[in-house]
Length: 117
Image: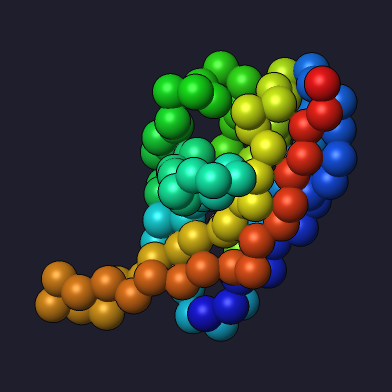
């Protein structure tokens, strides 16, 4: 499985960005976005199952929307009302069942999001 993330950039506070992540290779189950802010550990932003069940970090709930198009094998993150503290490298993540209760975890290369005040 390979994950290709895109859509990052520089935006002013209050603005919007849309991230995309395309998964190639074997099919994946849960997909998600994580971010690493400067000087901080990587954290979950949002994730979505194949069936469309979503989960968000409290700090982005109501501002960010995660979605996926299984036919296009693409996941999106619509980010509205961006804040300076949303700045960081955003990583695409996906997992795939290997059977027997085991899972494989995959990461994309990351895309920089910078929000200016």
